[in-house]
Image (cartoon, rainbow, N blue to C red; front, side, top):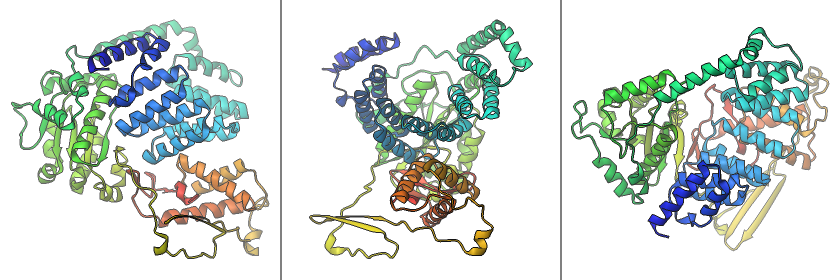
Length: 561
């Protein structure tokens, strides 16, 4: 199939999907060899078509291709885990979930994935509440807030159910989940005067909402002259970079070409900077949330990093309908003149900073302040080769948290060991050591599980009467997590899965599941976390030791290694 035929089929497939004819769209998709397609966002759209038709294995295969083409990580991994749940493959869902958490440990959607996985595994309603509470505390979503309210109702948490229903009605006003929340609340309480008024005057509120929506659409109409096809179809990185750089504004009266290279919105013609800035300001008057997409991009080479930056910016410009310019500079220029000198030249533009791992901390702090003060959806993209951001991750972990981390580097997590060069010492607390020798390779797996020691008599007298009482797995896990919070520790979503794995090992080894052993387990994990290297890096993702609230992060390897 030549490129012309491919473009025709891809456009036909897109139109069928837009019209809701997903069956025909899939029939067209079946005629295309997607292994030869490099556009990750197109592949993602194809995966949605297969998912809609419940062809989950095909959808996953396409998403894996998308991940390989542009390993931006989390959005593809999230979808892979979600589709695996839909397909009933819980083990695979958990694997993708772990990868998602590794790549983006602070993304709140990890709790949503954990909820879906636990639900698919048949977990109790009490166990399902915690991940949904975590998710909705960060992302206010009416669907999942209502799901949480239903869980509260099912387990008899009447007050929490009513409060959540009130929150849905207050935040969203109208809609199917508001109606459902009203019905649910009325099982336990009467509606307030304001809520009754909402029912009685629904048509009036709906008219106001419709007018507001129309005004919003008028302010957010896309410019008519947009052509981004040329760059999207280039497959050679150097050709793509040359084309972008050739669109630089040669006569920018306010810009010094030695300082920063400003590119247009790829192939589109725009008005001057002031008009663009004013237009964006008008848009933001009606936007409740800015859709910034700050990124740190770590790649094998400078060219690859620039390619990923371009692909990502174009993806978000397409997604949100943005049409503003992009500026490019490097750390050498910023370190010499300071970030403040560039602020007037990048207003209303995205900024790509190459060799960003070499930025001085003075410039890093200035960029952090700039991000915090942004009043428009423009973003900062830091680009460098592998390992160049390690220093920054260790010394400025809160700065790193402002960015999505994107990497096309695959770390070697397992390495071959020459058996004749290695001695494997025995450990006193090593319960079991399994050694497998295959030619010159050796793999060693050890379970280090020590039984909890009895407490001294004077301490035992002051303990609760149920301190050594047997608990089931769910109660034990809940108590362990609560104890972790009490000593200023936090367990990310994937760590909770590791906690459950460790509990199962404890059961196999005959260790009593009680409050005493739960506290011992958490304290052991905290010791491991304290001893771990600061800014640990895995698969291109930086792992600070503490979160933004200065709580010690207990990661998966603190429980199961």
